Image 1 (cartoon, protein in one colour):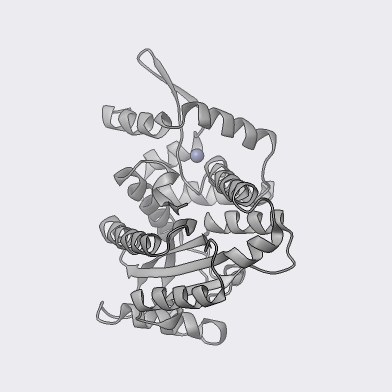
Image 2: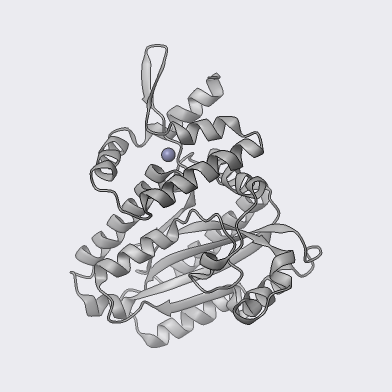
Length: 315
Ligand SMILES: [Zn+2]
């Protein structure tokens, strides 16, 4: 292990230490069952093959050996890979998000389901279509954070919790599809205009978040919709604000929101339909590898942990 790698490893374990120990034991004792054992085995194999196919051996090893102790000199640190393609790290991310939403629900909304229905808005923003370049992805994230900062300053008391996602899209594939995917195609086309030809594999940088509007009403929500629409005005589907599903158990709702924010997709979703990936084409090993590596590169440029993907603003 080189000193840079060790530094990175330490960086990843630093702010967490006790927290990681606590969370890992929680995850181990009570798996969130995001996937069945079989599904996870499949993901694990695919991830290893994918990373090896692009010769990202170090990352493959980090993911494979996540959670194990490693001794360097006199120090012992715990390996934490922070990849969403690692079962433990993904479950930890989901668990943490779930806890933050539950805390908000209990403390701010006093556990009132009706308040949640009135105040929580599901917010999705498609920020940019970029190449497989960590610089481009990073820039898109930074720009989105600036816009979110403006929003929070404008709407005092509003609160946002969410996460960025880098979705792999195959424009050649999107281009020949219709039905459910025609909206996605039109949106991607608009976002790509003036940005090269509509072909090849790209990254759709976007985020999903929960927005608590505070003590506001319908009229404000319409105004907020307009606000986001003006900031992202290339296509109307670039932004989406909608109330959460009514008549859904709060725990279920929070569970769904949290797991959806941290996906470990290995298949394409040609449409905006949430479950569209289930019938989507599988990523080729090489592309899956590049995507997993992209997340890792992104994190390494920042805090080194899943935190780099998080959005937590307002109060
Ligand atoms: Zn891990």
